[in-house]
Image (cartoon, rainbow, N blue to C red; front, side, top):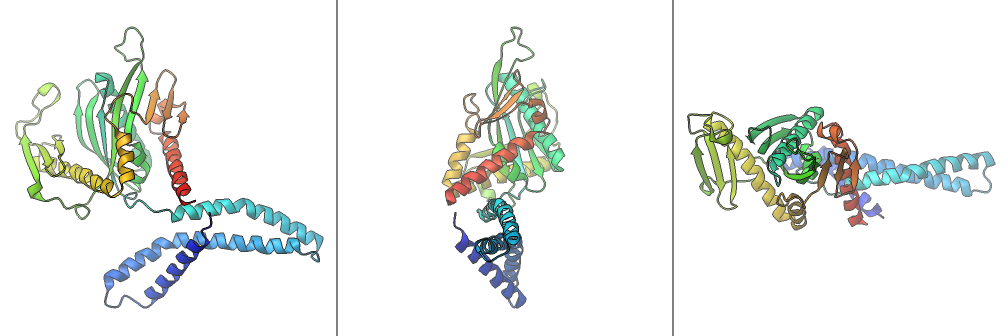
Length: 358
């Protein structure tokens, strides 16, 4: 892929920004701030481009020495060895620059809202959903992220019908966004006397956390219902009407939170989730391909629609999108080996995006 013209444009833009910043902010402090941020963001890209160009020039200089018949034989042999070594490093430098020039998903650096729901499979699906939720909690702990549980609708038998968490940290959405979809489990349930393997499913949705400045939600577009919280089986766990259900009328998005005893806290949590869902819907509208991909990933929770299978009898985890299989199901569910899957998914995504630029 010939990107020399693109590289020159980046270097020219960087130089122009540098000159403009030297002149000072003038009257437009906001524009100066934007230019300063762009200049700072371009720094690592420019450093990579300069390293690439330096290597290319060294390769050309060495090739000239190798072609010089009058040059000392030992000198030519040294040049040939260095030429071979630099040529081996060049593809790595080129790929690094290409990756840095790929369009960035502006949501990558954001925190995320995680939603896990039991799909097909009854109690076994609910137990699996709970395991997935714990897996992401452990993974967040290993990453040093904060895992703030927003709501849990449990079955009273160790499983969950659905659970929501706010995960806060560095580049959370970038690392977790490919987890959205149907996760399938194959195993023998503890209640299965005949030893038959059952297949169940749970859905995972990872949404970028939205701020109020990202998405303006009109209060007039909301229907807010309050009701008494209830635990498993309808048992009352609260004597006040503190549970909150918020419906965003234009999109039909509904969020219900009942975990806190305070109606105010439940409402704040519900608004956080609602804002993230509406924001993600707006992002999807702007990118039809992304919307189609997300719809195909998340699906309905049916057993046949899946992105990943956790097979307990064989001790394996298979991600069907990239054909990756790891025979370390325990370590994946502990969060320890989840990075191996996530890194492979990120690498695959980068390769596919690079291919579109060829």
